[in-house]
Length: 440
Image (cartoon, rainbow, N blue to C red; front, side):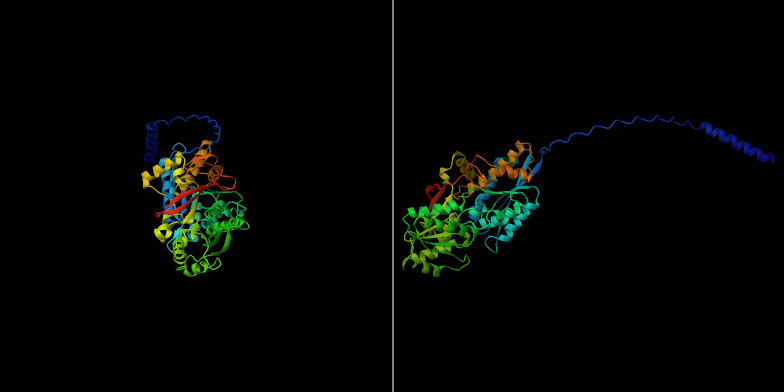
């Protein structure tokens, strides 16, 4: 028993010694006082951030005969953006441009399905703030309602059908233009004069050329039939005799039977003039060839059309000899009469791409110019240039814009205040300006 007590005693002594060798525990730190809550900072207004990107798209037929016109529109847009270094708002935003083709190889011209797809694509891309287009008025009738519901502004360099913006006109259908704007807000504007002006000017010009009888043809499209209807109404109003109006089949192999009929429509004789409302894509060159074949050259029976045939592709398709003497009307003044800003544009375009006589090139330049000016106005007002509503309001409110076409504004309907029209005639294988007309 003694030995057991001795072991226990030794274990206790060892335990005490080991405890004494451990360092003393650090004293507990006093609790830190709670920091006062920081006051909430007031919300700062959104500022354009360096490196931001906004996007502009165009939708034009880049397949088919209209390419000679639309290619110059695309290049004019690219030229304008290059001149501003693809930057807006003091360099805080880069501008990205995408050119969309609304034509298809299957149709060889603008395609309703493709144009609808383009409009939906633009709406889905939230970086897109503006849509430049369309070239064909029928295409615009499809895309305007789609873009309208997204409050995405659309500026056309070429649409002329009156009913897209106006309630009154010989070519305007019931319900127009309201049917194109489901939100009730106007989101569409154009920099070219409408057909209620073009068709009326063309009829008056025809009368001044000595025309007394006329036969009218159209391609049944919104633009072509629309301008033909206005020509028809004006012609009758000013005393011309309209022998008939009918729509052609753009896919017909030829129009010989039609021209044989028209050749005897004036009491067994041909009319003084055939007026066509159509675009070059819809077999316009073949129509002219068959007219000349049946009734002689364009001094014997005059041939006139709107801006849809005022393109080199029409002359080349028919042949320079066949096209000699053809008349056409185009909105605006001749390029050699453009103001200093317009002359500079022509020089800049020629330096970049070579010279052009296509009439819609300058309209593409001013269309995107108005969009850029609208974006800059939003920034100047402290707004957000990526906001579609802000950009739409600024563009639609364009006043006294100084562009290549001159100084102009958009009216309440979205129509340009420039209403001059120019008459052209094919001379020596190209269109030459022969007169400028004021809308009455």
